[in-house]
Length: 140
Image 1 (cartoon, helix red, strand yellow):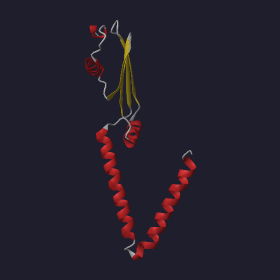
Image 2 (cartoon, one colour):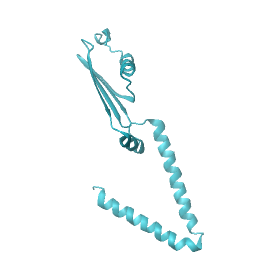
Image 3 (cartoon, rainbow, N blue to C red):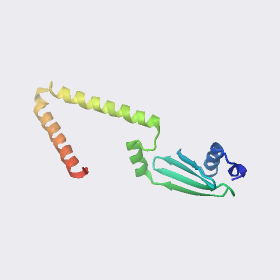
């Protein structure tokens, strides 16, 4: 990196864009710290992390990039971790839609006399299994 690290005020946007262009880093900037002698930049995304540690005097830097694989990406997307506001809205909308579909299905079972008893037994069994799984595997 050039003389931009010699100045007291670090050109953060230029540093981030240069790291992105040279190394193909993606993800959002999670943290940018400026100290007297060095800087650090952290990028985070679903199943992804990159950290750069920059010596302000020389402009030399060390970059650590971590790609955690498909299942980590899917897990982060499922939990909404490091995904941004738009993805959080999509998760919330899909949760509301799934709740509405479940509730309407539960209400409809009361109007189907032939399926009512078996439907309610299955619903109660599912609720009981979910509760027992919660007691067994969720620490208090």
